[in-house]
Length: 152
Image (tube, rainbow, N blue to C red; front, side, top):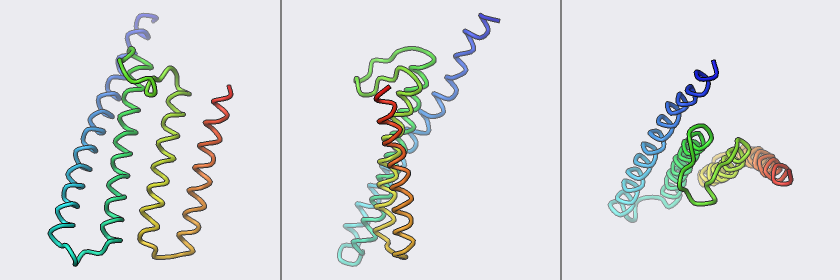
């Protein structure tokens, strides 16, 4: 049983490969989307609304952040279950708490970008305020969690 359990750690490679492919795909998709937005800006110069371009660009930034989250998750799973990688120190993940802290900080950034995307549309002021408060509460909870874990 010990040998089976020790060797079964390689099943995690499925998740590593899947999240890495998802990350690469999201990076490519967001990059193509950004190029398309840039081309659209110059082709329709003077007729395109600044807020429309801003909202679309912020949405693409959100996609890049998602790609980073997937990449960090892929790296973390590999490092936690398979072996160490030669990475920058800030990306070194020693345990699940390290992974949670890194993901929490990137998720907080993603939420902030999502709010920025929402505010550029400004359809419903009261809904925007409630949305902002909800995102603020979640970001506060994530930061509080990171600070508590940092003290341990």
